Length: 291
Image (cartoon, rainbow, N blue to C red; front, side, top):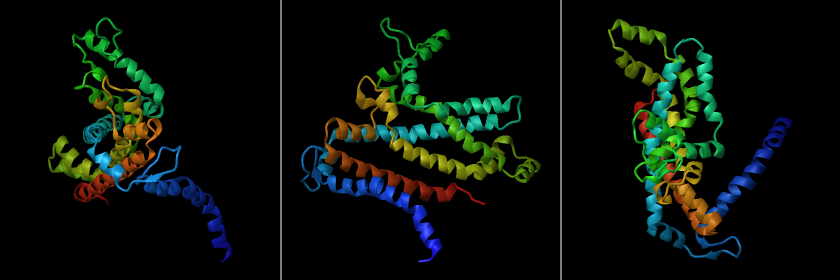
């Protein structure tokens, strides 16, 4: 082995060791544990596909799967559309444009539990003399009786989606350079052909920025399937209104110590995410355009 190969293996050794110990090892262990009854306190007991059978017979699993798919198929497109609208507005050369771009991007940095607690305060419905949340107070100023938000089963999941719009600045930052890369000659050709602004947007701009849109949709879908903080910090009056599969996994693993069941759920989630990702990749071939 020459010196270059030795240096190569030396440089990547920390990653290989870390990946093997902290990623690959736990993954292989979870496959085995998914076929056992294991509470992290006693030895694992082999039960075959019992965890998977119990999982698919559990009505709560299907309810939370429905919640998760709701967030994925409604929340992710809304997030992308709002990001695109903001990017289109902030792409224009207007006074103090740097200030506005920074203002919209900063919330995507200041996330986490503290922000969700703030959202919980803002979404307080204010029934029966309780303190009225900021959002309902603002709605009351224009004569609108605000909904119960998290305490209302019809508004609980839309409220969770609303809180996710706090971080659209991250997607906006991806779209701004994509919009800047749209060839001006194509826009000028569309003007010569008499295309309207809407026609230019859908026939020229969207195809040119489709790789960025595809990336945001795919990553947004994967991250939403793994969504945990929002339903955990912003629970509805009934947890089944807002909880996701990731919350169900956490509850079984670290509250009920059903590690085998949680491992089975983790691998079912992996298969679900992989399935929808492959579908997304297949559909992307029909509408994503690369130079």
